[in-house]
Length: 308
Image (cartoon, rainbow, N blue to C red; front, side, top):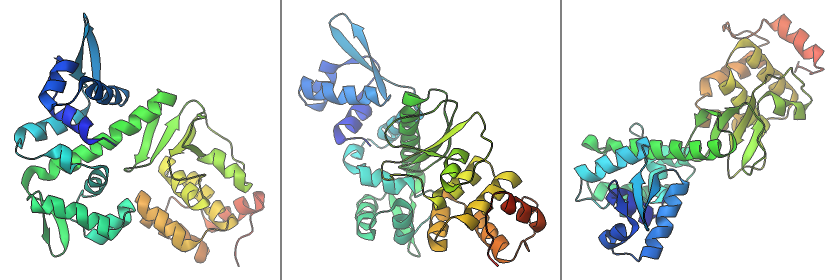
């Protein structure tokens, strides 16, 4: 995410500051400050302009920079660069509503002790409080959540635009995002998904001109459970639901693992409907699902054996 020195630069830089002026303000060597500015330039959070022999640093128009600098100006007595560690930003990202430590730990895939430690620091400074075991922001400090979200989104956009300038983010969380592109991507941490990935499970469908990728630094490949969720995120119509039903019937997918992934993607209800549809031979009232006899014919066409 961002190092402390990078947050210090963003908190301090005014349009047109030189590297030398920033180094003096922050009491760092020019070489150290220059490296931090270079990292911020790569992340698209500042840019530089030559002014003779000097290099001037200018904040970008990223919404994340705007929110962060507003916070710094409004609460100048708070040392945000020290507070906003990577783990802190990850915890804040999931504090979009009052949540318990366990809820945040599950959503952020962190240990409860880690979440507790982060929230204690914010509580000790009066930025968050608790009510019936649920943490929430005090007053206007909910802008910290906005900053965490905007920063993650900005960095995701930077990663996508580096390999697919016209790509679109369909879904995202702190560490991952699902993207639609018009070109193929062959880059580290971009994993093919969507209809093209279904071919790996002997389900060949007519492809569209779009390509779909999950960006994740933790996965080696997209699992069937994730693929089912991605298919619904791409388009939750009758056709894509039918594809998910075929995949659920054909691939060996652990139901608890599927429900866990569905919770991450906010698709708990949608996945529950699909599972009930298969268990009840179509006895589900949902106009986005095929009639059972139609689905049986589709399954037969793709040589998918339905459970009796």
